[in-house]
Length: 156
Image (tube, rainbow, N blue to C red; front, side):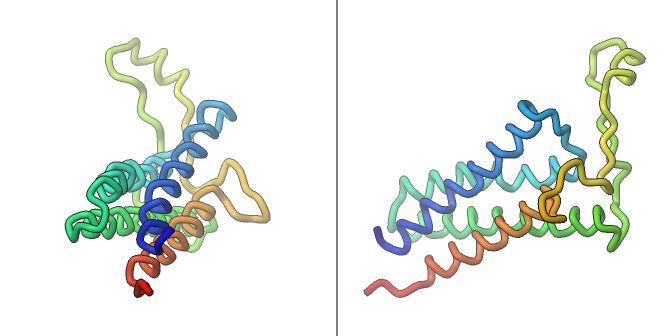
């Protein structure tokens, strides 16, 4: 596989795997996301179709542009993860109330009572002192750097 082919593959696999992990932790493990957790997902949601377009267009210069856009989206998710982790570790204050809003169209008081309120400044889960936001930051920024390196790597 060429370096650009590996870059395309990583640009698709990394956000897909991170989204699967986020959605799995939410729906299978009961770790409800806060508002900033959702913010980290949006760039990954954008990166997946961008990477798919890059794969379909192959070595076309437009395909490479889509690959760069996917790489940037992955990096943005990581940057949001850095901000969120900083809020969790108390390095700075968040910019939101970080409360889940009740669903529209239902009984408002019942919805409020049954909706979990998740604070953005307290991690629900950590491993080796690193929160999920921290892991997203590490993986996303690291992957974006590797993908960018692979895109720019000269082909032999």
